[in-house]
Length: 264
Image 1 (tube, rainbow, N blue to C red):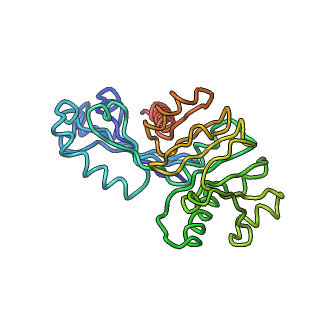
Image 2 (image 1 turned 180 degrees about the horizontal axis):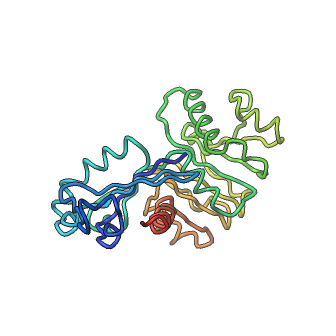
Image 3 (image 1 turned 45 degrees about the vertical axis):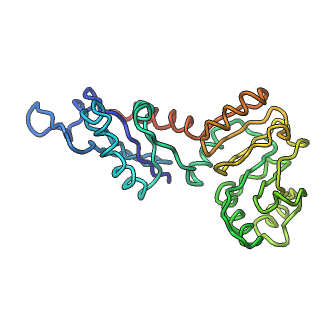
C-alpha cells in the first residue's frame, strides 16, 4: 500500500460539496489557520488531501511560514506531493520516492526487455555493505518481475573507479536467485553499457548522478526517480533519442486524477 500526502491550493467549490466541511445548515466552516484535510483509500494507495487555507495562497509570506511544518509532519506518514500551483510560489523539492511508488511508476510504462538501474549511494565504506544495501533495494523494487528481462545492469557507486563489470551471484543471494530462476546474470558496473540495452529502460535512483549521456544506449526510456530538472535538460539537449520521464511528472498526473475522481 502506498501512503500519500497531497497538498492542494484552496478550492471553495470543492469544499462546498463536502458534508464534513459544514458546521451548520447551509454553512461552510472555513479553516483559516490550518489545511482542510480529508482522506480516500483505494486498492493500491491511501491519499490524505490537504487543502491549504485561502489566505495562505493569497499571502506567499504566510505560505512560506506555515507550510514547512505541515510538510514535515506529513513526511512522517508517507510520501509527500505538492501541487504545481503551490510550487510556483513555494520552493519545494521532491525526494526520491519510496520503493513501492517507484515500482508503480515503472509498471505504468511500456514493457522493456532490458533494464539499467542506477542504484542509490548508501555511503558505505565497505564494498560488501554497499552491495547488500543495493540488493535489498533492488529486491524491493523488482521483486519477482524479472522474467521478461534479457538484460539487467546495476550501476553502483563502489564500482565507478574500477572500469569493469562483474557478476555478484556468489555474494548476493537475491542475484543468485534471479540467475537460478531465469539464467539471467545480474551484472554490476560503474557506468552504463552502450551495447545490448537499446530500447530498454533506465531507472535512475541516485540524486546528483552525473549522467554519462554519450554512453547511454539508443532509444532508452529514462525514468528519473530523482526528478532532477538538470538531468532532463541534459538529455533533452544531448540525447534527443532518449525518452525522459520523471517521478514528479508521474505523480502530478497520478494524484490529480484521483483528486478529480474522488471529489464529493
